Length: 446
Image (tube, rainbow, N blue to C red; front, side, top):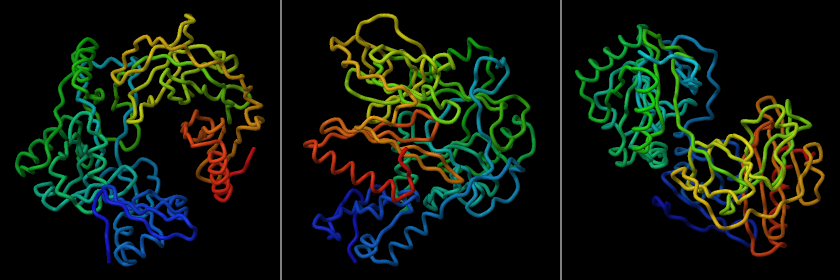
């Protein structure tokens, strides 16, 4: 049977006049047909009749089954040394965010790694959701048979590269770029300092080629913290982690582990008020804003109740805080800071987080839509989906040949995607297709 090499694609005949495209990207096989796109499973666990026909049914099913079944949500916090149930997320410790309310002198400080969290259960690497990372056998040599908590990491600013390698199903030689940096031993029921010593001794005696202990140092106070954070940021790092001295390994989110990250400030123009849901029903849920380069996104956090009741006016300029830019130039985790008093155009958002003036004026104000009437526009349609496990919304808006889609969890600002077509008719045709797909999945128009 034919197969696709990494990066290759092929066209196959579909049920209609247009062919479907098969692709292999990093060991993840995809098809452009609706049957593949509409599956709720992760992309590495999807298949369809076109992939089975092209690659062979046995080969394709072996690939999908090798990727694991849908993970289950971990149970309540328990004993990290207890056996892990099949397909269950591992019993890991999760960090709280440091809000400046804890004196960190004496805490153990380390760099927050921008990699892939991995739990070594003594036999295999497990993701937080319970999926296996299929590392080559030579990568595992020397690792002990006790659980270790750590990060699969290549280097700073290499998150997407790391992800593309460790999620592959073919155990490529590219794993030689990856290191498993260990920062805890969950099954050792001793204070952190004893776990550190045990981990160091264990790794030193076994000398695994691709694993090492992630260094920690005592924090000497806020000034030391700020200096180290500035140093890490200057190197392109993500932030810092702080571990409470003498703390035990607790499963679930705990204040004994704190994360400290730097956010950037920038400015954007308010385009529209998006209605809230749940606790925010009848008032602002999020602001649709735009950067000078045309990038649009929602800002849905950081508002007080008073600001949600009387949000910044359409056409005004707000300051927001964000963590970093995605590859597409969209700010990640934007949070409202305040209204900018000046009437000048907003500054541009640069990848380094610096704001520089742009001569272009902000886009013309769009009519404000009151939260309660957000779905009444003829050009915008709002759909909602709810079951025992999720409550989501999906919106689509047409503006000439431009299609604007917003989606996310009810009560959140969600995400925004903008797509431009050759003409208005093509945009309307694609929108009708999307609406049909959503209603077939159970979304109800509001």
